[in-house]
Image 1 (cartoon, rainbow, N blue to C red):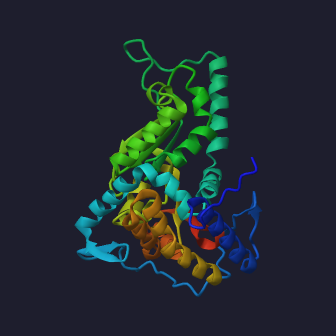
Image 2: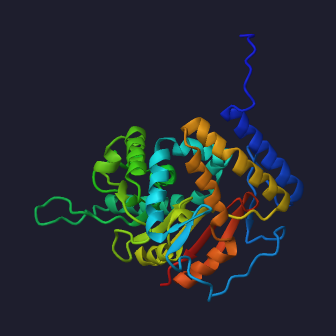
Image 3: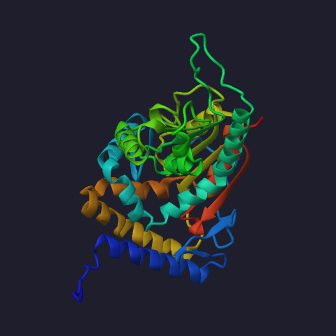
Length: 362
């Protein structure tokens, strides 16, 4: 008590706090739709490009995401065959520090963006309806089908959710909590809600499963089977056609070698009428904020990667990969070409991130 504690201006907490303050000031001064939640910027605009520079309007005849023998790895040109391995190495290096670094990369805002993604999926209300129906069925004495041995068969979930590139479980845990799966795991039988985390990187999955078992215990994974972790590539997922009601991918699509292929496979594994939602860093629609955001991204984030994770190069790539990714309108067009209907996007924090969504035709 009474001691004066001096913090370095380059400490992780001070840098993140300063970034949040600067981002808030810049966007609040120039964006009329800005709102604040818990004193942090959280601007949500649906298809709002009122403050954006004139966007390039994509066409249905736009070139494929990958054409020819090379593609981009950040600002570096690499062979298509090499990119997957390079991305894998990035996330192997930063797996243990990935969630901490997300706080630095987004100045803590990634938590609010993921919360908003959860709301947009409607998983919470869906789970309540499913649980209510299950309770009524139980009260009426309706039993699960039995297999020939007289034991409970492998009952299929009523609502199935796939979270791609979600290795550490940050988005999946939100689904689990919203659907009250932890409480359901205390009862016998397979949960009516299932959340599958699919990631190409086994190190990310290792971290995610360890976190899940520590947070929820093993019953959620082993008994109720509400949560599972599966290694797989977003371009050719290891699941049957028409398997999932909801497909989410958060901050992962830009790391896929061929985005068009990943979108087509997302459509394949969704059930007819299933919903696709992609939360991804995007292109800032506010010019003053864009300049400040670039300053923060290229000067602060790689330095934080070096200080916190002893890995500057991986975070330099992550920053560059954001700039090389599709614009909001381009991704809309690619989703339509892949076969999605009702495609739209919602900008958050003046387009620093955007949620794109679409439906698989019935």
